[in-house]
Length: 356
Ligand SMILES: O=C(O)CCC(=O)C(=O)O
Ligand SMILES: [Fe+2]
Image (cartoon, rainbow, N blue to C red; front, side, top):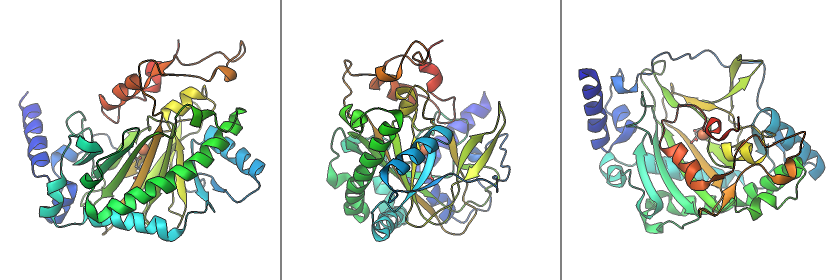
């Protein structure tokens, strides 16, 4: 079809500018190209009467465990405060990632590539060529584990900060993962022993101001595939979590920026491992209608052991005659294949591994 060819050409031309959505925003356009139009976009106002839980990590541990368990079960998302990481460290990370995305186009575009050589890439829309509609976001992606990145491939303006952030994120994720395990009634080291802290990807996202925010999204509805995600964001906002109300009814709930807070969410593999006790919940980011670019930095944790003999599935100690396994066992290659070979917006990969 001619329209498909035109779209494919437009996508290729956009990708070849190597300037990302930031380049489009800088060019002063007042309307966005058709490749970014999302048909049937329902940007209903977010619910104002509810918010995702905020959990104080300085509470006595048993209380914090209970709150983390309830939040992981009922929301799949929570904000964590009093976690011990200084606000200045969080701000320095965000500011360094911002500096990268706001480098002059000629400098920034030298990093633009979809090939993840040495564990580093920078592009607009990971699923640009697979998706029905592109979104108003650019991403710097670094894989820290299980294979270490070639550090000199990380742009110098944010290298030290991203490396330092990986360590902070790991320490707090270790603590939270341990508490999530306790919430499941298994030992605090259970997920860590399964190497769930070893697979580590970090994305430095940039959402430039969008001249027509009602026609597109910052990132489409999706779930994260791994075990646990830790996210920091600036004060602009735009992240929303889908909250099911009853049956098929749902509303979108804003994750309001809280200075110094870390946003945690369970991924698909944690929902599988916990046999549906914890939820991997759909979330999205609305297109940025403000005047300044929005920055978020997410760290995704998943198992580092990825041989064909390394199998992941519902924990045997959670399974019984009354509570049978709801998912089959899977290999990391199957999980990652299911995630990266699809459009981000398509159905959760959980369906693929669900037992009948
Ligand atoms: O930018 C955000 O707030 C969310 C990003 C996100 O969901 C992701 O990178 O998976
Ligand atoms: Fe996400």
